[in-house]
Length: 202
Image 1: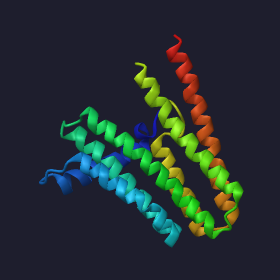
Image 2 (image 1 turned 45 degrees about the vertical axis):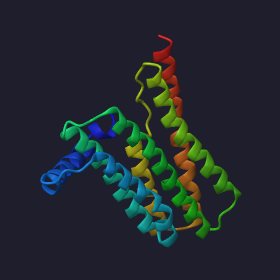
Image 3 (image 1 turned 90 degrees about the vertical axis):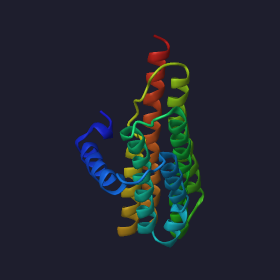
Image 4 (image 1 turned 90 degrees about the horizontal axis):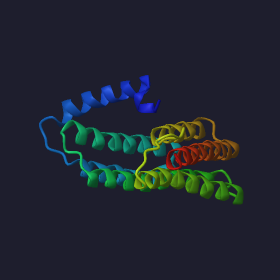
């Protein structure tokens, strides 16, 4: 069961539904523009982390909310279309990069070294590969949405990690966070590859 289908996910979308209907029911909003705004906020995440980890976390939260609103608006207004789905997925990759870049900026404040740089690029690679595998499988005409670190969980992980850095600080919190992130992402990539083998060779 994905995070969206969980109790927490249903509660979040219930709040989102109330927010969207109460704040946007009298105005026409293009979901694609909401997508772009969310990405622009994501671009500001590294600057936010440069100023303070808590500012970076807040920007991630706001960006993620916009990412939720665009899809919800498209579904609720019956204006979903392939281009909107394409734009949303493409902009998500930009957001993933800038979210992680924010933590690289944080590492500079805690004595950046070669180890974190290597772990950062490995994490970025795993994140992109995880997203690519699903797109490639769907391009081959199959569905395979498995993988523990779906995007919602990645965002929650990064927010919690950023809060730990803000509350506790320390170089090992930064290193430990990226190492744990990479382990979870590697596990998720393996899950998806195994799923691909199952559905594509059946």
